[in-house]
Length: 175
Image 1 (tube, rainbow, N blue to C red):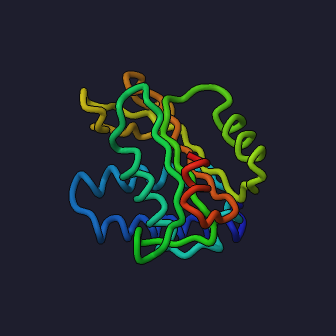
Image 2 (cartoon, rainbow, N blue to C red):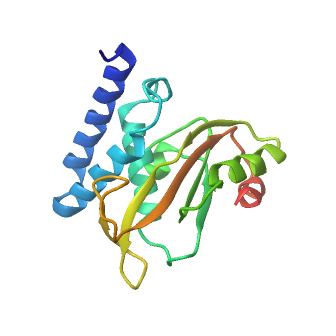
């Protein structure tokens, strides 16, 4: 039997997926909804149920847009403070997004580096997704699951929330 928190998590993800369907069209909506569901699949319910649906939608779609294009073999990193007026969602934390080829110890390495900077990590979302990219590094397909499509490449999509950093210099240093 599912717990109340698990039911609330499912309801929030379904509502965020409905926003994807409302705001995106056709194939873009299909792949973005699949990403959103895989992005949040293994997140503990208590880490999501306090968030607004709009923020869950925004965090996932922003991460998807960020990681959709990158040169194969080249990590992509950014640190920012999401404000609703700027990116369509908000958080009281600084967000760090990393898209990289999957490899062992990524989360351990990143969190250790952040701890050395005395940053408190409040949340780590880290799905490993199987993607296919074209020659320009744009995702052309997202497998239905982590084990589906053996021809696709496993990639790490890491979303971390840390204590808010207000200066541009601090954000650059994190990156």
